[in-house]
Length: 197
Image (tube, rainbow, N blue to C red):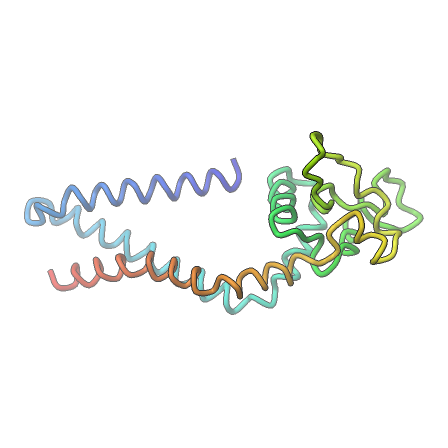
């Protein structure tokens, strides 16, 4: 389930609350209690979005720590592994700051004492995508951490995901702000209408 479960739960809540709002909007006097419950739920969702935005802004410098913690637990949780693989493929990046961050993971650690077969490697999601290849080579990142930056760059993405994600957010700031405003405006409008009732 993981992230999909939370997303589906949020979507269900949105559909149910929108349905309740549509049902009671034409007949406000008939069921004022339901209208008040809907308004309270809408206000709570708005406040949670506001808190999430503020926390995201305040802790934006902690993103590197969060990514490094995720790298450490990469093989522990399949949902986390899929999320990291998706992010690295989508943003064409590898690791937090660089591909050498994967040495923090006990399986990919590049010390001579590491008995893992994946020693000095990176996940296959770091590999450069070959459009002509029908089957994904899951061992394309083996031993890459032992190579130099330029030599590794011929096989994998060498730039870190923190800087790549930051650049993407900066490049799409207007779009993200418009989406946030589009979500917040109807909620504020309905809360204002509720206060006037």
